[in-house]
Amino acid sequence: MRKLFRTRFLVAFFILLQLIVITVMITGSVERYAIIYPILTLVSVIVVLHIMNKKSKPAYKLLWVIQIALFPIFGSLFYLLSQFQSSNRKLKNLLADVEQGINPLFIQDEETLKRIHTVSKDHLPQINYLQGFVGFPVYQNTQAEYLPTGEETHARMLEELDKAEKFIFMEYFIIKEGVMWNSILDILQKKVQQGVEVRVMYDDMGCFLKLPIDFHKVLEGMGIQCVVFNPFRPVLSTLQNNRDHRKITVIDGKTAFTGGINLADEYINEIDLHGHWKDNGIMVQGAAVWSFTLMFLHMWNLSKETTEDYTKYRADGMMSMDSKSDGFFLPYGDSPLDTENVGEHIYLQMINNAKRYLYICTPYLIVDDDMISALSLAAKSGVDVRIITPHRHDRWFVHHTTRSYYRELISSGVRIYEYTDGFIHSKTFISDDSTATVGTINLDFRSLYLHFECGLWIHKSGVLKDILKDFLDTLESCHEVTREECDFNIALRLMQDVFRIFAPLM
Image (cartoon, rainbow, N blue to C red; front, side, top):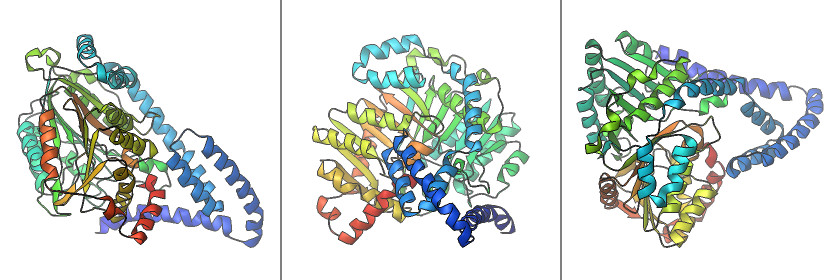
């Protein structure tokens, strides 16, 4: 407890202290305030004009304009403080340096590209965007196993970790000591003793109050290389928003895991936080693992400010496994430090491409007008659009913000279900028995625009039937929300509408 209060709580205290100092400096005396007020009013007008003409999401613009209207003195100052920071520029420059060395290694196999262009004409816009513009290759020579629960994901992960011979890379938003993590750590320690290179990376905010402050030193003492991503610092900075929300395990360059599952006991229902925890994962083997390897090394070297020989982590023979091919696979990542909202664009293209059905699982449904319009138009056009969200919440205000979108979507023909057994944390889209994505990206502003994320786009693979079956099985534990339920409580509706104004913060 002494360490806890000396570190994490002191960080939060110093941030609050900086806010107080700014307030006192501005309003410290009547004479000073009389001089500063008209200057700051002019600054507020200029800032609002800048915001309205900036390339940004309308919801973000609205939130800042409302803040400046309510707090004309402080609103514009906080906007300037959040937008013009040297720490953000430094990280972007580091990112550019890392990408210069790693991006050329995302090499597209031309035969695979020709084949998918021949058999998947309806999905060419999405393929051209992800492969041609963003730069993530599409692979064959890959197999995937869909894992519909945290318990199954955990069991398969232990099996594959125990087979490691060369290296293990693990990157997670949350690690928490308990049954799940301790069972993994036992294997990692054994593998280190066998000469296997083990690297672990976790997000500092995601593990806030979940791990000791010096946990990375504990791992390093075991021979495990460790990085704490974006350490929480006692400085007012929007860099605190850019969290590593990815979940990636890579073993020997041959096997990879991703999905919604962090390394904590609630994900495997060893403890009960919000009822039964419904989540999923996916195991990938073959050529597509190379992209997950590069995505991990990308974040590792961004954090360590180093470069290395990436090619030594590429497994031999992965591109020539024709006998094991099962459809097309495209791993992708998303970064908040560029202007490309990869996760959002993948979801929008899947919505727009759906012809018969589109089924979605998401723990949060806090989206902008573009996403609402796309979902509504798909439903109005005859597509069977169904969305599963949790019935039991992890944060009540976020849950009620999610529910504030129900009325509009249900009125458009979208069918909304709530998982009544507990909390659903899965993030999946599947449409028309042909295409799906499984990954870490929630349908909320933080995942879509502020976090580092990842996922796997799947096309014409046998694993699609397993993803569809999991969705249909989960529906049996759901309650379908009706429009009458949404209209029931006027006071609650008003509260939800207020929450929606602050949706970009959630």
